Length: 184
Image (cartoon, rainbow, N blue to C red; front, side):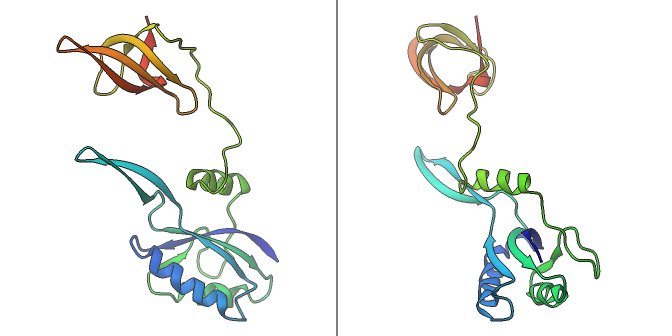
């Protein structure tokens, strides 16, 4: 048996329909011990529209579905062909013709699951520069490029700074990433 995560290639936009079909196949006694789990790689994205923040889910690998399967050495063709018969499925990534599909590496699975938020990131990203409140910085990226200002707040967890800059003669706080500023 070859237990692992396999990548299923689908038509873009058909991921949810295919997930429902695969979940029905998982109830079938002949496939219940072969297909263990199914995931559509998606992440939460904050959208700002008309001044309102809205959190939505966005597929970051459109056209791909992850299947955790325990493929038997014998009879794997039957299990794979049942999945390939689903309308909208083009096949398994890494399997051409009658070749048994290969699972993706555990590092790839870990990075995808971390991006979806199902696994906590094992490494904490830290800033290369140390920023202090009251320090002067120049903004070198984003919509406030070439503005200078003073740091009002440092958020290490998010990697963001609140910098007070002068816009039209008024002190205005703006939020920027660490990578968008340089120390003066």
